[in-house]
Length: 189
Image (cartoon, rainbow, N blue to C red):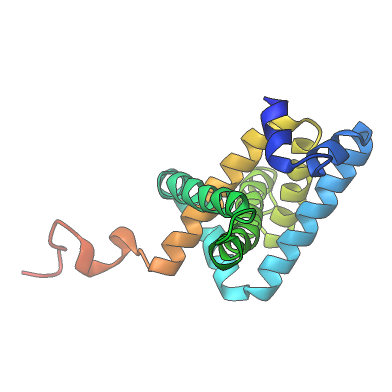
């Protein structure tokens, strides 16, 4: 499995560079990268990022059901774009796909890490966003220790974040909206 991931990363790519680091260096790098991306995303997209984290925490199953296929599509588009760069139409079609994947996937993965971190921090009595960012950063550092763990944890975090982000962008209100109820409310006759 490592060979196939290294093949996608290119010869002498980032995967080999990360695996050449010692375990503590990988963990510290994972914590730093997760904290940096989380703070940038939540700082630049203030209202949107916080709403996405809240939406993911309220209904994580729906977020995963929407987010897993969405993250798969964005990842596949980025992969196809990367493969297209070496062809004649690569600059026209491949580069936008790679840019889409390189901006969307880390952003939604950071939202997913923060929502998971805030849920864990809430169990210990700290239900604030800053605690979610810190615990999510620690989770990113733990995931960076081994590549299979990073793939699994990153996939789960990106599914959470992508689902919540799509739900916030599309404005799914669910049963909270009185017009979307299937049973008439008690106050209407």
